[in-house]
Image (cartoon, rainbow, N blue to C red; front, side, top):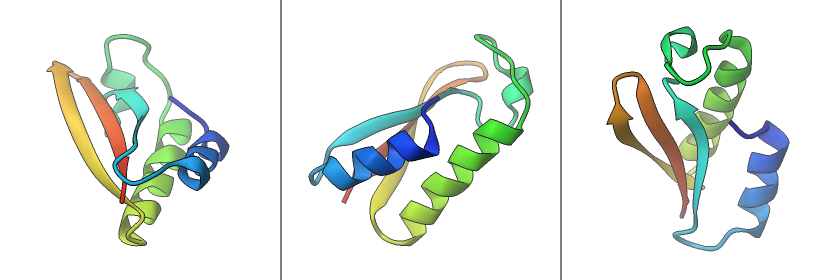
Length: 78
């Protein structure tokens, strides 16, 4: 998982259709993910930031499923 600051830095330097994986695991219940369970504070912060950027029309949000509770969350620059 990247920080909000690194996400914003990527956004300022990215070009149309550039992709960034901002989280790998299960964003909506991080305590259930297989690789490295964690509390929900930090993932919720990046989730809200990504959603805000999406609603502002700056990125598209997609997911790629790798397995149970194992997703790759990707931002695509518009």
